[in-house]
Length: 505
Ligand code: NDP
Image 1 (cartoon, rainbow, N blue to C red):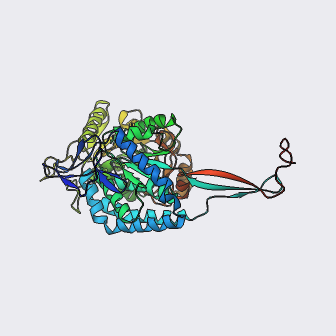
Image 2 (cartoon, rainbow, N blue to C red; image 1 turned 135 degrees about the horizontal axis):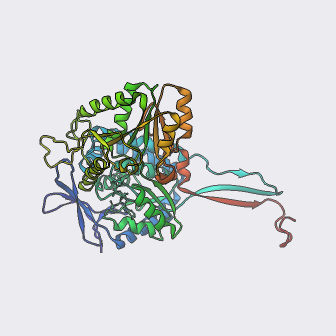
Image 3 (cartoon, rainbow, N blue to C red; image 1 turned 90 degrees about the vertical axis):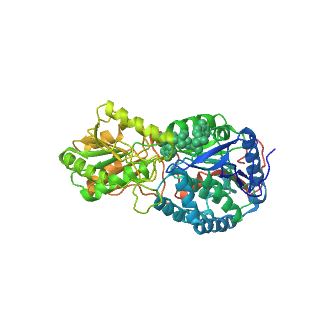
């Protein structure tokens, strides 16, 4: 039997123990099991969260279903819009704490997490506006005295399964449109970064969201998998690796749930000989070393035209070696940690694979030593030159600070190499020739193309992938529609049905 926690518990080892967040309360898990949350910069355990099981999933789904059919169903779009603005304000009021929690979870820089925390209210404000936009039509017909109109209704219960790299921003991309459209939601954060999600669910409750509209399950694998097959879940909205996305699509397919998938990438960042090189080099660095390369949109394949190849590689090495890897809390650090031990081991594994396959290591490739953080998971930013697009380092998503530099001859060659990948999330084009820049953008198989910039996203513009990088789009007006079902309603305004076998009579 799960019990309500009147306050969060201090464990014998002196860390805060959280509950699951169900019905606007922290509750103990049926499993009575907990997992540790570790700070990757210090190696210290600083919190514990429940390792939920199938019975906990049932409780959360039942709560979300009750809420969907209960008080929440009576909220008008205007009420939901007002709530989203209040929720955004609650996040703004607690932005420092929210940023800090995420840094303690995944070791990203405080300045990046603080920037994301400040931006989240803007997403809610945007979807508050869209909540009241009409989404149905009145349709012209071939029939007399008949009116047909469509309405958009919420889907029901949404499972939002999120990764560890930007735990809250990627959740907000789902929460904004899902709540604006009138759904209820169960968030399942990564086991690496669960606390920040529990905290913003608490803030949503404090901002007046009815019980059960936003529940949070934490745990090691089981709750995520159970949500994808649960008959009480209507949609799975997922961000994470392509392999997990494929497993989720397959599991959810058995009950034909709606699915949106924002998956991995191996994005090309292409530098033409006519580029503004100073700007391009900054864009290359930001593209692959921002967030220690732990972003789905990382510009991990750097394609450089042969005529400027040596110059660009030399300057890239110089700038990479200047990058300050350090304390995520410090404002002059430029790269924090790798988020967890498994990911750290994976990054180091790919460095060995690249060396063995003949890529030329020209910068980094080793752990970074950070004074005072001897147990931290820090890596030097790494550049491999003379990479061939068939090498593992050019084909598989590393999700770490490793750049693979690949030469190309001309525009056609650049496009061929860029598109020679199973992924299609994003791409960058660096050129001062506007005809070329737009021409190349048109030929790249990617959901997002940045021209003379990189790694920008926003609430009003769609983000998602071609090919193995995903299904559906987040952000922008159409994301709201992805959380709705369309219903078509026929109305007879004439004499009614006169002949059952000739309905048009
Ligand atoms: P995963 O894709 O494995 O996990 C993302 C989320 O899905 C987590 O909440 C995870 O929960 C959950 N999950 C895992 N398996 C299932 C399943 N069968 N059914 C439902 N939910 C599931 O990413 P990881 O965090 O394990 O990282 C592994 C790799 O994924 C990284 O090395 C990186 O390459 C890539 N990645 C890509 C991201 C992107 O945005 N493209 C983001 C994060 C990672 P739990 O943590 O409890 O297993």
